[in-house]
Image (cartoon, rainbow, N blue to C red; front, side, top):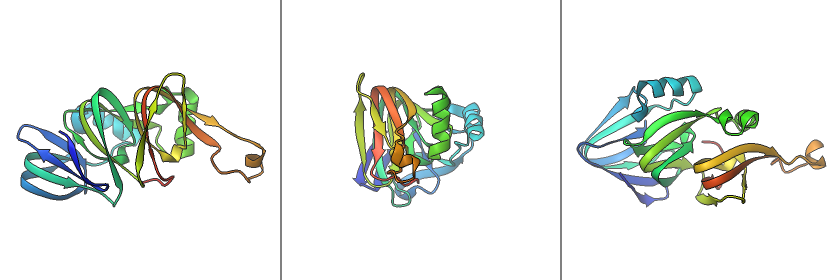
Length: 216
C-alpha cells in the first residue's frame, strides 16, 4: 500500500477493502470514504507476543488499525515525513518515529545490544534511544517522521558510514552498527564539538539521516 507524498509533512494512503494499515494514534488529518479507525491492542502484524515484547522493551507506541475503503491523509506534529519502500528486507526504526505502515509488514522488536555487543547497549544509554528498536519486515511501505529533511545514504561493503546518533532515523539491509568514540584533548577539557560519539554502520544497505540533532 504505497503512500503518496502530498508535501514534506503530509502523505496520503489509499485504503482498500480486505487490506489494512497501522498508524500512530493522532496521525490522521483527514479522510474520504468509509474508513474506520480502531485502537490496536494486538501489537500490529506481530500479534500478542510481539506486543508483549515491545512493552517490555519500552517500544510500545500506541497504534490505530485503519480499514475500509477510501483515502486518508496522515501527518503529525509538523514533522518531516519520509516514505521508505521495503522489498522483502527489514527496516530498523525507533517506534516513536513511525507515522504509518502497511498492515502486511511483520512487526517485531530487536535488542540493539545484539548489533555491536556492549557498544550497542552503550549507544542506547548515550543517545537516549532505547536498547530495543522496532523492526518491520516484508513487502510494503513505511512512513517515518523526522526533524527537517531526510537523506538516504547507501552503505556498501568496505566503506563504513559514521552518523551522529542524534541524527539517526532508521536503517535497513544487512547492516552492523556500533558506537565509536573520537575523544581528543579538546573533548577531555570540555572544549570539543560535542560529537565525541558516532554511530558506525557497516555492511550493505542504507541509513536514513535527519537534518537535525533534535529528538521527536
